[in-house]
Length: 218
Image (cartoon, rainbow, N blue to C red; front, side, top):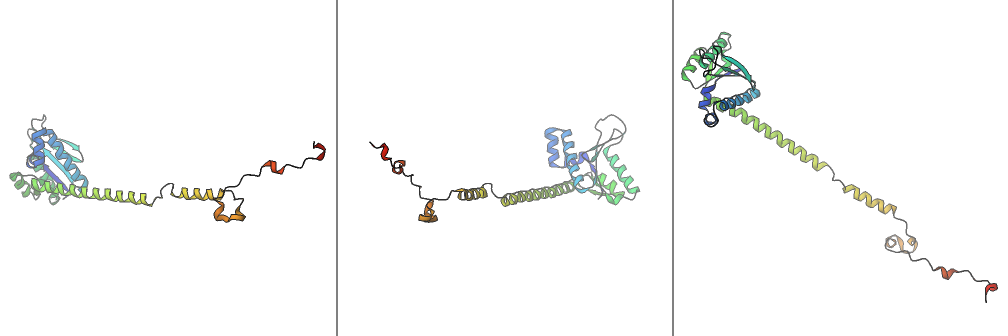
């Protein structure tokens, strides 16, 4: 499948999620939700997706076309309904010999019979919903796998990085040992005891006074 043509309002009423959005928030939000889902599907698969909506009192006799989220959105007119637009697109694809590469998604049985007679494949609304969900689930699984790989890589880098301060304390202790002044009693007590010895006080200066000359004695 290289091109997908979607009967917009038919799919909105057939998908439970879109039907709930239509009931709770209105037609505009339901259209936007459908186009968003089809846009993600087109981005992941590379399929050219076209969704066709009825005019619903839109002015003008020519269908309008716009591009939203990578999806070609066509609105019909009063004279050209969505069914007519889809049949015309299927006929053109068949005339170009590309009917086998185009799929029309709708639950309208009459529309599927008309398009099928042109040699274009069709699929139901539930089949399209399952296909879109399958692609979205594959993307979610791949996203989770990439997220888990990123977390494992981060934990691995964190574990391999040495903690700050672990080596600096040892080097600091080594510097303290190296910079400690040598003990003056090292010859008597040895290296093991010199660290605990306290250097004794210097002898009192009075015990080393020089002798007094007899001339100054009384």
